Length: 172
Image (cartoon, rainbow, N blue to C red; front, side, top):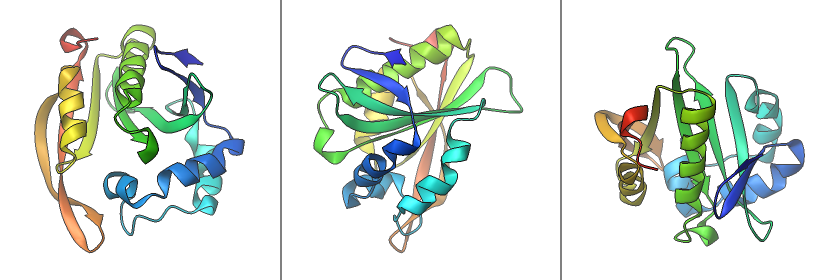
């Protein structure tokens, strides 16, 4: 487990399927995390669980001090670039604006930079997700590019923003 101030991160296990499904099936959450039709089935999660925690990719549930799963966060190591990792996060709607996302990102960034010896951390975020972009910038992430009409959601293609953070730019 990896501990933050408001949360801790525990590796995703098969018993988490129902909780993850419930968190990820809300329409407002799916707008930025679901892709395609925005529907993620329990079967999909179960079938892909074997790929969720291989050595180069880890998925964690985010658990608050009360013991509630409030979201999921993941990282994967770039197989072609030494010390480069990608991250992604989803917070359940009823837990938005409570600082769980910020603490989870900070906790994972510290882990990757100081335990895994990351050189750079990257992410991709839907351009319309202004709140997330502002949060990432507070940690020092810089916009590195736009992928035009890359993300498909409800019959619309949306742009995504590529963001990157070098270890020396990290603002914990």
